[in-house]
Length: 259
Image (cartoon, one colour):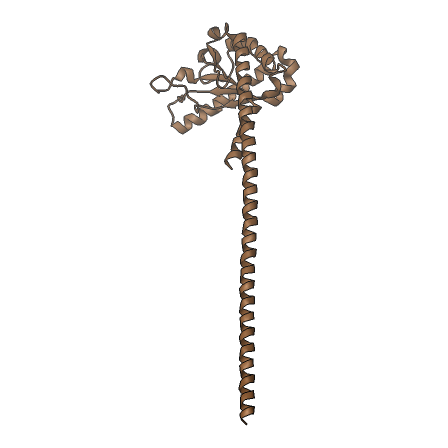
């Protein structure tokens, strides 16, 4: 009996030891799996960090390339604008005082600012003197813009009509603005129609149909006196303005840089 009891106790002890060994092995296996998962997660995070850094590097290079492109476009634009301005001034410097016109070096607009010469008050028919000015101005103007060095850069030639804020009958500001919008649009269309009929521009007429536009702007771009008050006479004007394709390229690049 004693031997049997000892044997049973020994067997139970062995079972407990075996269970302890098995439990310990299971715990170690779980711990190993846990560390393996931690290592796997760390590897995934490291890969994500690597990919994020690579993406950041690519975006940095792209931004640098776009910034360089923007700088080059801006330099080219300024050089082209300066050359066009110099050619316009060389061609028209003696005529500008006679026409009471100016050329803006910043936006290359040729501004005719003698309202009594352009149109009768409230009318859209070109006056005889303005027709004479256009007969002299427009063919020479187009001759400059269609030079081989400038023509590919010209995106649009805008004929802009501007009015003062006043309107006959002393109506409300809204009524005056709409009425002047209609008047300025009629005037620019009349100007466009006239210059397209000038015989000297016939060789460039097809090109002009794709680039010459009429834009009535009412009183939205008033000219002012030094004290900031409206100058009605200078506000009533016609402008010929050039828009180059560099304007669109700069805008697109600038937009992409901010995204």
